[in-house]
Image (cartoon, rainbow, N blue to C red; front, side, top):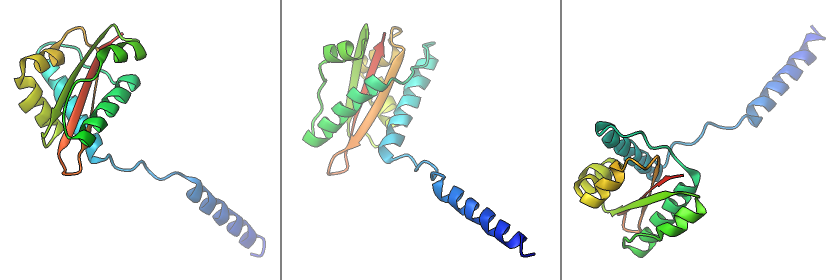
Length: 153
């Protein structure tokens, strides 16, 4: 019994250290992440209905969508950014952008906003695009601003 007690203590100590060192599960997605994900899913659903390939994510495009959404939310206005910069920095042969404000969900931004606008709809359904991301930000009054950036290498 005297030999077992130190082994049990050592085992329990090891178990505690493993539990402490194990990272916690990833935190739940933020509201902005859920907004963007819902918009991306709605975009791909619209593309599927029109026999278009599913858009894939892209780190560089996401960076520029995040910058744009953040700037728009801070200024309380929407505008398009310089797509030539994105094409050059992200090494894309095709780029496009949709922006929106005021839609309560990402799905609404796509289905009630962009898909009802000729130019935005054309971007969503453009066959040339293979990459696409949406980033959303809220302003200080709780209004959503979204930037959807498309590309093709």
